[in-house]
Length: 150
Image (cartoon, rainbow, N blue to C red; front, side, top):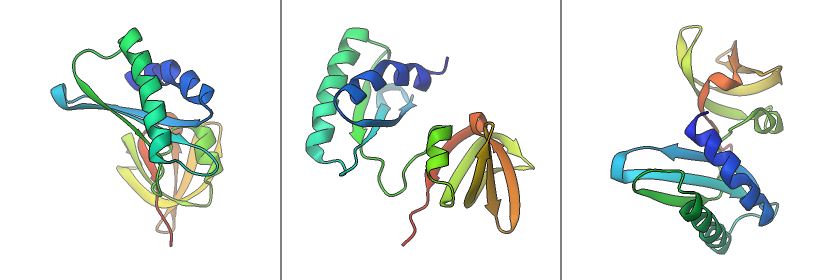
């Protein structure tokens, strides 16, 4: 199991129990500069106080469970305008929107896509980029974010 999946299983019940949506988690291993970033949301938005409260609870849980060796920085954040997308349900929620997607392996010779997310079916996300459509397996997505449209 990947570290991020393990951390999600560990942390999501606490975040949800506090009344927030657990958007996702990123773990970036960089020695002493490692970062554990948790994204939370709620219908009326996230404040600094919300982030602080979740950070205290999650920090206490991490101290007890100790799932990460060495030093790291814990960050709790709102998803922001360029909201990260972590799972099929989130892609479904934002169909019709522009997204930036990076895959772990090439799809039709490319790994980076910026286009309209058209549909998702059986774990396959269809994205339109410059008039061409690409089918991308959600499990092969390394990183995905919405593109803010103003």
